[in-house]
Image 1 (cartoon, one colour):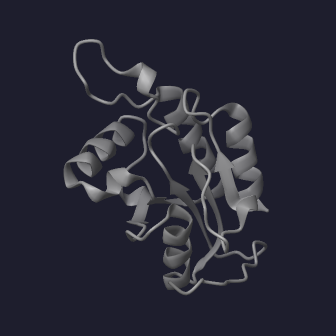
Image 2: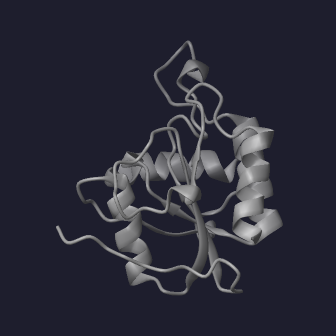
Image 3: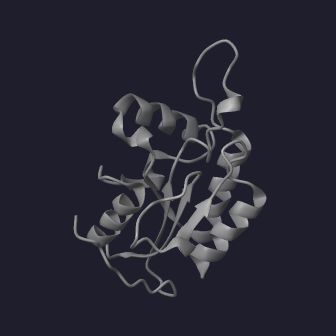
Amino acid sequence: MKPICMIFDFRGNGMKVIFLDVDGVVCLHEKKNDWNDDEIFDQDCCRRLKEIMQETGCKLVLSSSWRLFPESVRYALKQFRECGIEREDFIGKTPLLDERGQEIMAYLKRHPEIHSFVALDDEMFDCDVFPYDRLVLTETNRGITELIKDVCIEKLNG
């Protein structure tokens, strides 16, 4: 696959986006219900995500593998709704390619209206052309902390 090269002007007033992974970001596996296998979204992580959205005016793009399964997307939207994050806050999902960084770059190439973004994930990407200053890594068992929230707001608002 040919590398995707792009230059971003993060000072612009265009659209702001969070490319959102789910597991290890808002869904912490040690918070599962004891009585079933449902994934439980951490309320504090979701609240912080909502605060990032309020402070920056950003939208969400689902980059998680959850995007590949309609029942997972429906479940995630239900969990997010309970935290005040609505379906309308999501503007899309990344395409399925070989690697998450490539998927995000492909999405950005198709959406030039996006002028600022961060990728919230608990795993490092392996993509030569991804601007790694835009990757905000969470710890799998902690998700979006206050520090992560502040970093995202600073990066998105420039």
